[in-house]
Image 1 (cartoon, rainbow, N blue to C red):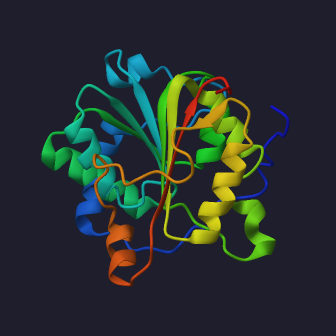
Image 2: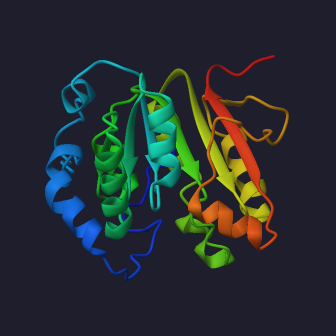
Length: 230
């Protein structure tokens, strides 16, 4: 890796959010079952965490988890690791998992950068989902973007050969920035010439439904781990 991520630069801001009673109960009753504690000294044992061997896909910043549980429910043969810092979103996803009987999701309630760096082994992920990450639109804040040199290399290193990174944003500037960064990241290649068509298997996120009503666009990128070449 040519650039080590600076862990002092956060890619998120902790927002105040009130927990509903249902979210509180889900955290208390289902957290021990579905949540994996952050442990900087131990690599995640996915087979032990999920009780099986299956392709592992990580989602960074799942928000309220609407797309997460829908994708997991539709793909029971895949294991999904959701990483989120915001407690209400964790509680909401736990509630959905419990009420719908979804078993193939685990959650790490912590900073995704540190989770990726400390707990995820190189070459262990079949995919990474980045749906509507914070665009940090001001130029002085671009250093906080989750897609940036150094961090993009970290993410690429965690993918197995043939693994994919799927990025979606409603901010054109961030889309162009990410296209440039990912295109320049060693080991990644774009599945498409430029931006990807909408992937039909991805359900709409809660944030996306608001963006659509506000008339904002959508840009998608799908890169995969593989050698560069024709």
